[in-house]
Length: 141
Image (tube, rainbow, N blue to C red; front, side, top):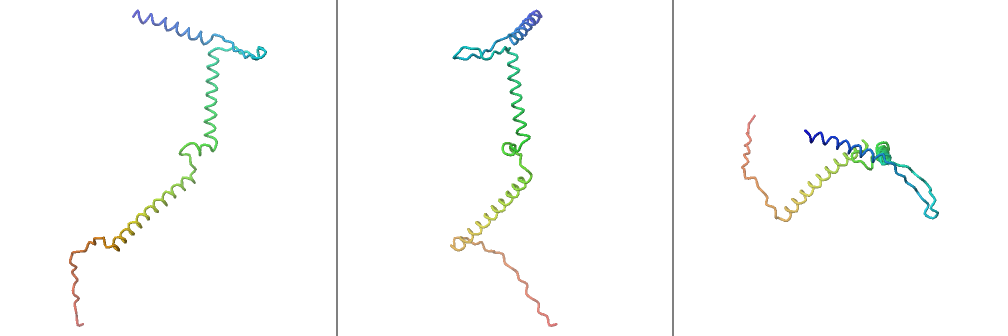
């Protein structure tokens, strides 16, 4: 129990040290290199720099998202954002491609069978079942 009570003051002092460091003031001076004249002076804290950097980051992300969502760029960049017209055209092209592939396979099979028959290399399977043809009945009516 004494260790837990000792850790609380250490954590509180660590937290207060961090807050103090975030609020320390620094000066950023931009000086002309030729004349050594101070051009601009900024008084900054670490906290203000973190807030400014975070704000700029959030604004850039928001601008990028708005640019993609609200403009036609989404059709070129993001996958799955096609118009319904283009989706219909793609489905039609897929069906035509499939039917052309199927037709090509059938024609190739037909040509291969014709070649085999003409070259005499084809083993023709003959029907060995006897066909029973009924004899016609002759009537004198």
